[in-house]
Image (cartoon, rainbow, N blue to C red; front, side, top):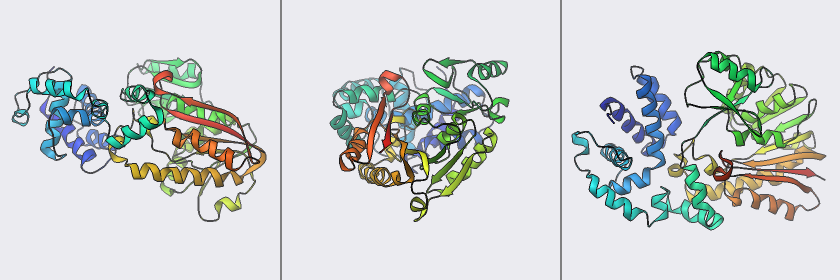
Length: 399
């Protein structure tokens, strides 16, 4: 397979941004494609996928390439080692002169005896993951080390899955429905869809199939008062609005004002008019005491369940941050429930496959507040068995 030097240089620059500067792979790829508009579509796809895949397999590639630093030359060697792992021949560029395919192959055989290296994980994450999931850990990470799929959530205020598929087909984009996921449409070939008339008209949002089941678990009905307490940029807020037929009131809360600004823009495009936005301050929770029929807590978490689309999380998340998130999750779960009316329903959700962030937190709530809550349902979405992102979703009734 022939590769263009300009494309490899773009990838190497991107790897430096992720590894040395700590930037997210998605944002880096946006920058690369914006600054390299002369790249042909095939090269643009090669660059985008290349950055994601090498970030995903960083530790394994650097092990077999004997890369010691994440500097400029280290990123060149990381690319070269990854390329050899894919059983391609390297071009005769001076940047690759230190790499030998035979030695890379021998080191790969050695790597197979160390799970963290073979699965390309930091040691702490592998240790914690195995401690929580045992043999299922390797199975789940193998699934999360695959490339992500492009899945859309149809905005039922404006379209249906059938209508959206027909509209995309008009633009030569192949898509299909996903059984058991009522609002989901799978695009068969990953590509940029933000230019399409369907997106500009608010017919869809990009959202994984597992993520789409969070809002549905809340059982929010038209006319209800709903609080989305960790709204972020509002993907699940907008889904709730559609499920509620744009009736009632949704209060979208977050501690980050800039995320809520994004939500305003997305709501306008989606034709959503029943969302009220508030930045959380020291008195917000108290002011909203016992005011909601439904409460969504899509809490901050490690994001280990969405490593397919955010592989840089493996290298940017520390064990200290992971453990600190447990405290944040518990604070939200144990205190924010005061905003819910008695008889109301609360959903606690994480995009993590770790029980310590999910099931364990709910069990603690039920143990410490036994007169306050009843578990109605819970569902673990497994990347290995359910094919999509890893999520945990629990629905609780406030007594």
